[in-house]
Image 1 (cartoon, rainbow, N blue to C red):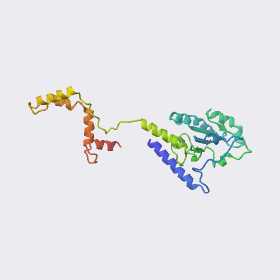
Image 2 (image 1 turned 120 degrees about the vertical axis):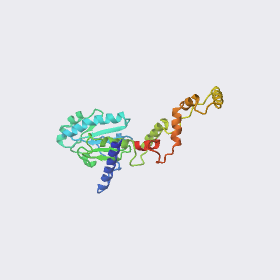
Image 3 (image 1 turned 135 degrees about the vertical axis):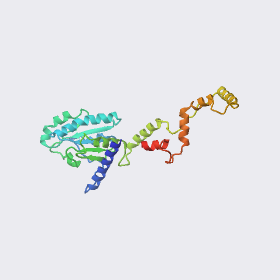
Image 4 (image 1 turned 90 degrees about the vertical axis):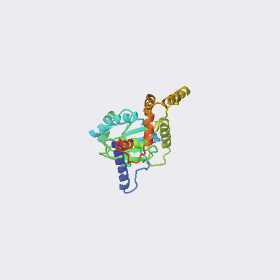
Length: 271
């Protein structure tokens, strides 16, 4: 968890840096520019989903490895419940990359579409302000949230995965209605999982009428005997160890001045 928090803080720092360093119009949280491959507009099919666009070059051996590693990436996120994510690979526009396009398509997972540009069309990479090995993560409303470049886009690290997971659950850009369903689902899930509080006392079971009368009779007999602890009082003392622990937990104030062996000190030391 600490590693994921560190990665997320680094990504958010990159987001701010990218936004502030752009000289004209910041692309972060802006709608994805319109781009097409022939008559197809791939981004139109992904509205309501988190979209990951990878700019990979078929003539680059490292890009082929990245394309192959997108399979384990998507499988891992699907196992975690992130099944509403679309992945897209866009090949380079050069003639050599076009020639090696079948190789890139064969290395990519079967469920991830790989698009080939033509020399006649406007370069998609330029439209996206991207370069080789870049990963762009768009939210459910089609707005750019993360633009990861090397070395952060290297799938051996967890930056891309954390960026996808964060964009999947959090409306970082705000005012996207598609996230209301995700929030409601999370609230519903959390509401059904009721876990007992460790600090709450455990109530003793109610005694029957016969047990109560027997207890009174026993107290009456012991009243005239020695003042030392009776066998009944000893067994009664240990009959509810959980309840006694719960009462002791509430009888000790959590002021921070308790002895180091106390309950409060144990809690603070574990933190």
